[in-house]
Amino acid sequence: MRVKEGMPITALALIVIGVMCFIFRTGMLSVLITVIGAVLIATGLYDIFVRKNTFLGIAEAVAGAIAVIFGWTLVGAALVIIGIVFVLYGIYLIFAAINSGVMKSGSAAAKIVVVSKPVVMVALGILLVTSYKAMADAMMIAVGVLAVTGGVLSLIK
Image 1 (cartoon, helix red, strand yellow):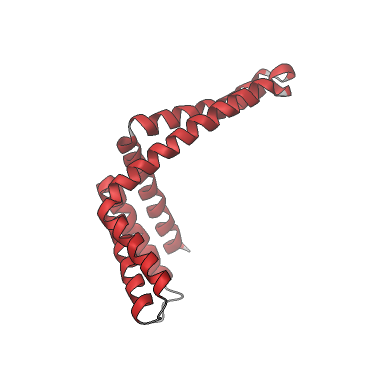
Image 2: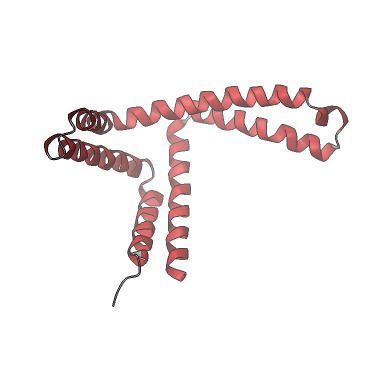
């Protein structure tokens, strides 16, 4: 029996990763960061010693070492920075909505739609800044659900 382009294997891998993301949440995020760091280190060493590309190999190995050593710290800092960007962008969108023609002459439904996106952006940004670990849990649950769904849909095809 020949596996067509590895789809069943990929689908099963997606399901397994999705279930693990759903169960372990941020613990799975730490595992993924560590695995990515280890792969970067291995790729860097391969580039240095086999492909003789010293600069690229060193860059990959250093990035991998940073991911392994400071993984969760980097994720936490990235989530806080993304939260700050969401808040600032949401505030910008609020001022843009106030100055738009929709707010001056649009229907009530149009006004709600124009204002809802910036308000949601600000709220998500505040949540990311104040409780990034809980938001990381929620994101990993969502990733898990999406991965399982993608895997199941790939198996059904």
